[in-house]
Length: 264
Ligand code: FDM
Image: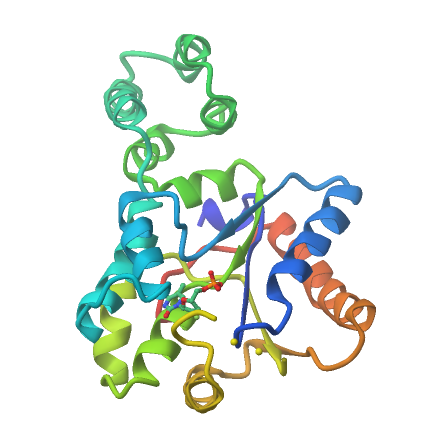
């Protein structure tokens, strides 16, 4: 109940076929929101910087071969690994949660101790555990994901591809859609899913025939909550369409909207 009135950042996901302009549009959107005074961070999946991400990257570049199910699970693992807070913070958060819950420490004391931590995202988050907030909040801090921490500290995340790419690309290879969805269960559901229609070449998946199948899979996943952006028109027009849907979404999240999980 409390959560639903908490102001937070929005989780915005951009999806679409390869070469539909998602990446440049996410850069443009980032500057737009930044200019409006929002605190914004851009993410992308696959995140090629992690160990799992490097395996994915070499697969995509045709430098390694993997079973279709194995690569599917790696893409999913790449999203799960990004949930993780540092071990140091996780340990700290759980000990503080315990102290706050048993009233051995006031939230104020905990906040002060946090100052030694240096990571302002995390400090920001725990600073919000102000006097009206009880131990439950701190308890949540202990099990909370990185993405959720960012959103709850007011950061808006623009994510270039997410679970929908995971399901659309793998099911386009013929894998059962429900099987594809299963490992994504429990990841945060986006506040806005914008799919770009239109737009494609060197990597493994960039062949016309395959892209058609992916488009069909996206169609299956799409429901009324998705916003479809026509990406065939000039970039500025696409940018305006995105701004419009995103503006509504960030305001709704600012007012307080509860977070949910996939596949709800
Ligand atoms: N892709 C991306 C997947 O097959 N599954 C996933 O879960 C994700 C996130 O990887 F062809 C595919 C989609 C695309 C390729 O994506 C690399 P980028 O956006 O070009 O890095």
